Length: 151
Ligand SMILES: O=c1ccn([C@@H]2O[C@H](COP(=O)(O)OP(=O)(O)O[C@H]3O[C@H](CO)[C@@H](O)[C@H](O)[C@H]3O)[C@@H](O)[C@H]2O)c(=O)[nH]1
Image 1 (cartoon, rainbow, N blue to C red):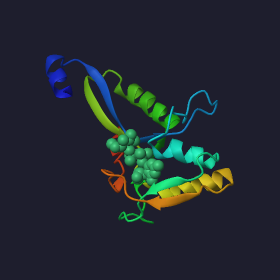
Image 2 (tube, rainbow, N blue to C red):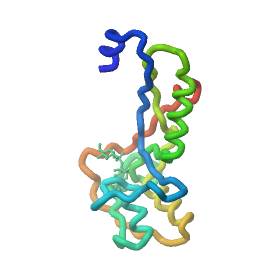
Image 3 (tube, rainbow, N blue to C red):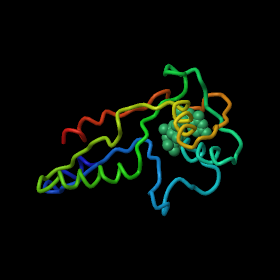
């Protein structure tokens, strides 16, 4: 789609950031991880378990080819993602053309690593049980953020 737009409008300037696993909240608490209903994603769900309701997390499989066997993702904090956009806009400057880049950390964190980090930060256990893999889940999804890092 972008290549078609570029052919029509060669002077167009634009950014095409690719997102990975967005997590976190503003320090003010004005917005953050509180979706309506039952969350599908790990972070809001595990945050609710850490707060005591529901009483445990289902960890979708422990047979992945990752350290510890649980799925690994590239989690990036929402504030860092915002800074990434600002930096990209500043970098774009007067250049024409579309720039595509990955906004991630380049580091995979497994479900069990994330649970351990939450337990350490919150000072309380996050109960979980291992269940079947979620259909369609890949074991690992981690970005290469080199283009964003080097401009
Ligand atoms: O209750 C949960 C939720 C997730 N996971 C695992 O945690 C990891 C992260 O899951 P999630 O937060 O759902 O992120 P993704 O798996 O990267 O899912 C993305 O990709 C899915 C399929 O395209 C979309 O449905 C989601 O919205 C989108 O965030 C994966 O290994 C999941 O198997 C659990 O073990 N238990």
